[in-house]
Image 1 (cartoon, rainbow, N blue to C red):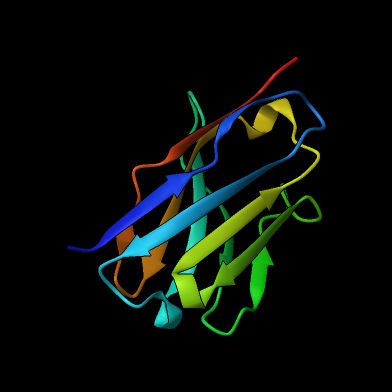
Image 2: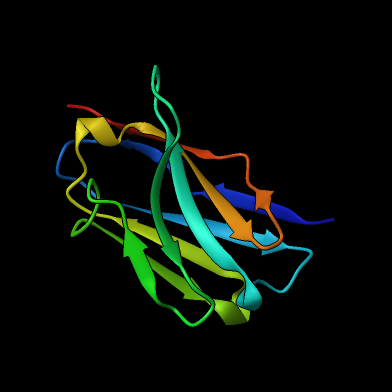
Length: 113
């Protein structure tokens, strides 16, 4: 049925970059508002940013200027480009589709030297 699959996480040094992907299966994602969240050890879930069906974006202050969300509607993919990564960015990153309210299982991002 409906499934969101995140990928692209890994271990990087501070200042490095990663691009996460969220592939949507089972629904047409072009009418979905897509959001990125993260869950760090010992902390509550944080909202990172959102992209509308038309491509408008908003970001949390903690990532603004470093993270960029884009979407490829033809292929049902939403991307999270993460630059200048910091240790505090370490978390499992999740994507969510609204109004479908589907979540992915997450991908681990670890930032350390």
